[in-house]
Amino acid sequence: MPKTSQRKPASRLSRSGKLQRRGAGQSVSKRVQRPKHRDGDPKLAPGEAPVKPIRRNAQQQSPQGKMAPQPAGRLDPSLSMGGTGVLLQEVQPQANRDPETDLEQEIIYGRQTVLAALRSQATLNRVWILPRLRYSPQFLSLLEEAKARGTVIDEVSPQRLHTLTAGANHQGVAAQATPYQYMDLEDLVEKSRQASPNPVLVVLDGIQDPHNLGAIARSVEAFGMQGMVIPQRRAAGVTSTVMKVAAGALSTLPVARVVNLNRALEYLKEQGFWVYGTTSRGADPIYGADFQRPIALVVGSEGEGISLLTQRHCDQLLSIPLAGRTESLNASVATGIALYEIYRQRSPHRLKRLEADTFLNKSSTKAVESRGLQKISNDR
Image (cartoon, rainbow, N blue to C red; front, side):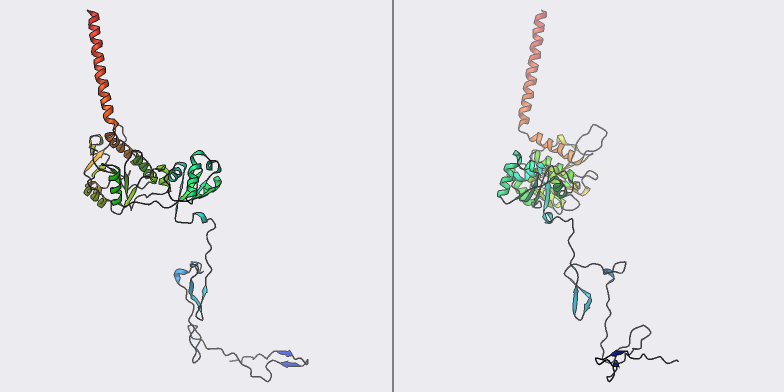
């Protein structure tokens, strides 16, 4: 093999101007190349500790081979050197995040919804309103009372309200309220008995459309019923959309949310409630039922209706007779018709109307008889 040529040491000038070679009179340390194994790892010197290679988790590595970002404030153990870690850069907050609405609170909007919340003295953290509505007669006094309770009143532009409500129909006002407080079923039953000797509770089975839930809540409160019961799973809850459709009804209407709907129906039976279920066909007509007792009215979803298991827990199934070709009604429409029938049977004006109709029928009969007698007498 040919001998490798050794490189001569570089020359430099001394202070005296003489040319000297670097390392003259000193021991020259030569760089020793370690023999490599077949796998490419260098051979360790005696007494030298092995150096662990940096290994990155495959889950933290992106398809392009770059490290994925980690949560801020945490150390990356794969980048540790000498017992010290590298603090990753903190994740910057999103640019479009609103600091005012970053709290775990609900944004309600719409004039009737906000007015109902103000009248019921609900806990409102902040109210955003247009300047032309701020000093209107329907808002002025209520906003002053809310401001005295600690609510922040902000006069904003329509664009600001559009951003806060994500483009919804805000009608010039929005508010930041605490999440809806559900009531326990036991407390709802007790409160309903205090409100009426024969309370009516509407039980919803699988209503997933928030607009239907809001419309049903509006009808329940409008006809003077005592509350609603909704399941916790596979059903819509009380959100800002529901409160907007309900038009303020949920500010005074209590709602209980239960885990098992069938167990809740059995509990209502133990408390003396008669459970009615509504179906589209194959049931007794609703106008023939007796509603002069504590009632739990079960309403199902539009597509599937009341489940078969829930129907077995009902004391009686009712249906609304239809004259057209349409086989079923919207869930909120059917609930409104059923609630009106309950209200009609319990209405204190019903007996007066019946007495008035009887009086009119008797008077009209007497009038016809008298006219007939007069005609007979005239012919004679």
